[in-house]
Each structure stands twice: as structure tokens, then as C-alpha cells.
Image (tube, rainbow, N blue to C red):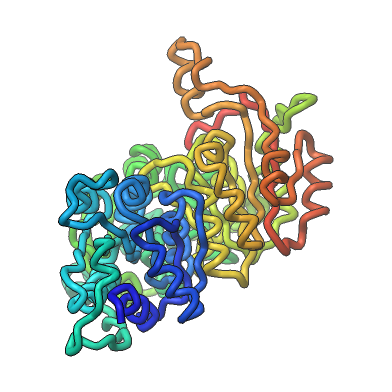
Length: 540
């Protein structure tokens, strides 16, 4: 058995049935062996950066450790941004990267891959010999799952073709690591938080993605303490249906939510990143005391100041605090009027539509989407000014890994590849992805990848013929934004040429008709939505 065959056996033994990547000299035999002998699904991307993003999207919606593969040299180098995104998101991902033969430093594709991998992925595992290949692979999977984060498994091309000597460590099935036991909060910290809730007149409990499993406990604590509830965008929907749920907090908070946070005197966050966006640069909670509950002792205050912190699991802490509290009645805070206002709140009320004869107001388009898109879906929102509208106006539940927002590195070009990975990972749910024209054009070839997968993805391209964020920032400074503007392009025609069903939308009637034609979603579709460029979302 050759080393690449041993690696293929070991990859499958670790529970892998899908990989993303691009073929090259230094990984093509490994990939074809995975396909032919093991029936592994190979999603062939058109760009290595996109391949790693697809694997990242797959991991985010499934909770599994994803696998991608690229060839040596430029194959790895092109994937740098995607690896950095995965590192900042702490996505469990193994990237099997080929490398040039160590004995050939003059190889045209040679560069020192270790420092590059450490600067981007943050973790590097070299395959030392054919005899240790399976052991090295196991180490890469263990690091990816337990850190968690991406790991580059570096496999020289010539080594892959060498025979595995007899007596080499055998390939053993993966044993999942035992989940770390979350820390129990200190009794004194629990008592202090209970005292704060007793003394507060207008408390709010704010849950983030790290508190999804603690939703019922936090809801019960809110009812017991008379607090209002809210979530970050990444935990949207966690308290859906509760009469005193304010919705999403932060820069994307709606007017009523902002008003209530401005009146709050205590905000307790559970598993939430209290950062500049959640705090809306300090404007959201006014003079409220902020207490962060988190399992990571380094998290509270790392990205925005907090007044106090409790180290502990969100659910355990909420239940422990609730056990110390007598039921609190706050009729001046939890009012019938507030419950009625929350129930009747309409994000599109008083919308001053700014459509033109050939372009639709993006808010009007999202209003149409709000009434038509399936509630059970995966929503993917890319990076750019365009993302402000679905983020602010569209109710996209984030529970059960159904919202993918790969904004960690601020890199454009993420919407389409993450949508492909999400659709492959969760084919039981249609994917609705929002992307911008400038963002899409950085990786146009992945439309072909989407077409080849046949996945149920509705790719909405909000096209303002510009880099909208740069226009928004240049113009108020009196700088001509012409370098950030581009000619109109027929993106629907391009999509059709690459095998997709596509429609162009310029008005409300066209939006309704296009959604009539594509819903329910059964395959990949692109909606090219020409939007008014002068409608600005300040907190995208």
C-alpha cells in the first residue's frame, strides 16, 4: 500500500464522506483513491480559497470536522484568506496540502509552506514519513477538533507515492474526544449576579451563539427576574414567541429594541461576544452595567469593556442565579404596552421606497423576501454594504446552525462558496444566500461549482454596480467614489452560461414573479437584483 492510499483509508476512518478541493500534482492520486475505493463525495471547486470556504461552510452547518485538499505551492497560497477566516471562527477543518519534494528546492512551485500555514491556519502538521502518515493525520484531526480550528496537514508529493512499510501503525477508527466539562460558576459570583438582578429596575438578558443550548434556562431566569430578553444576530430566533423578546441587539437593532436598551440599567450577556458591534460602539446600552457570563475567562472585556464577569456555563449559571431569586414583578418594565408594541412591530413600517425605473430599493426587495422565503432554511450573508439589508430587516433564525455569517476576517467573496458548503452539508434545508456584485465577481467561477452540485441554493445578488461600502465612506469626505463604481453587467446571463437558472429583478413585480417561479426551491438559482445605489445602511 502506498502512503496516499493509507491516508485515504485513515481519512474515511475518521468519519469523512465529503471533501472539497482542487486537483493538482500533489493531491490528485489521493483524491481519486478516495473517490474510487471509498465512494467519498468530492466537491471540485474552481479556486482553492473557495474550496476551503466551502469546507468551512459545511463544518458550520453540520458541526463536523470538514476536510479540504489543495495542491502544493500556489494551491496552498491561494487559500490563505479562507484559512484565516476559519482560524478566527475556530472552525474544525483539516486541509490536506501537497508539498514539493524536499530534495527539490528549485521546484517551480516550491515555497516554505510551514510559516505560511502558521500565519493563516495557525496550526501545521507535517507528514514525516510513510510509516507515520496515519499517525500524523490523526494528530491533525485531533488538533482541529479539540482546539478547535483549521490545521494544514502537509504531505510532500514524492512521499505520497512511497510504500508504507510493514509494521507501520495501523489505521484505527476515530474516537470522538470527550467534550470538555464547562466550568461551574463560583457561588460568590452567582450570589453577586443575583444581587445585581434584585437591585436592577430595568434588566435585560442578552444571549449569544454560545448560549443556544441554555435558551430555556435563560428564558426562565428572565421570567423570574422580570428581565427583557434579546439575542445577538448569531443567536437570532432563540427566544422567538416570548412576549418580551426585543429581538437582535447591537448595530442591527431595530428602533424599539434600541429604545429599550437605552433605558436598561443592567445587561447580562450569556455566551455572547460583547464586542464593538454588539455594543454598537458603546451607544446601545447607555449607562447600563454590563455583566458577561462566559466559559472562556479571556472573553469578557476582550473586545469591549464590561463591568463584571462570571466564569461559567450559560445554562448552569442561569439556573443557579434563578435558584437564589424570589420572583420579581416589574410592571413598569414588562408592560402590556411593550408586549403589544413588540407583537405589532414591523421593520418595514414607514418605508420610504427609493426605487427608480430600472432599479429596486434593496429594502423593498427584502420586504418581498420576508413574506415569501421559507422559514426553514439556511441563510448565508456575505460581507459588504449589501449585507446590511438582510441582516437588519430579514428575520433569519440562527438556531440549529441555520445562519452562516462568515464575517470574521472582513473578506469579500465569501457568500457563494459558503452557501455551496452549507447546502452540501445540510441538503435537508434550502439555502438562501445574499451576495454583492463586487463580492461575486471575485469568485465568479464558483457559479459553475454551484451548478454542478445541483444544490437547492437561491443566490441573491444585490447589485449596485459598485463597492457600496467604499462609496458610502468616500462620498461624505468629498472624495470622488468613481474608482469604486463599475459598469453594469448582465450577471444573470453569466449565470445561465455557467449552467444556472437565473432571473433579473428591477422592481417589485419582477421580484414577486421571480420568487413565484423558483419557490419551492429544488435546485440552484441566481436572482440578479439591480438595486438603487443611493440607499445607505449605516451599520452594515
